Image 1 (cartoon, rainbow, N blue to C red):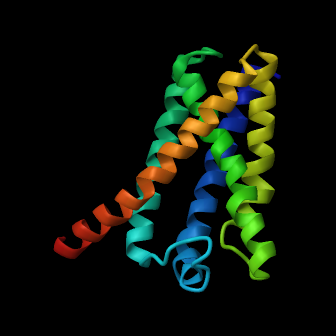
Image 2 (image 1 turned 135 degrees about the vertical axis):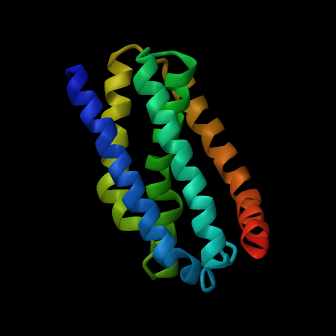
Length: 165
């Protein structure tokens, strides 16, 4: 795959990631009120605040990866961790929640149709470039853990900022 094709796929991922976050922002807060098993209820404005921050981080991580252009570098593993997290996110929680609750989980469609396949293409390309599988898995686990950990605090920060803003 050429460098320009990889760049195009990375930009396509950002589009899918953004659409995914827009889909979640529109419907997940209301869904969370009936899906306590999978997501603590969250106010729409707090969720949107957190989503904006996570989206900005996704863009920043992608930009740094594009600029560094070094497969196997720390910025590259950070990027692949983020990409991998979004691919996994399509399955867990979105697909699993939809199946278990028998109710559509917001983000499933964009996750399954956009984020998962694009993530697979990008990760497959980097594996061909020599990225270590165990470091890839570790980076996905670390980034996923950090994002999940940060969400609770981003919701609280959004609540404080929006209450006084």
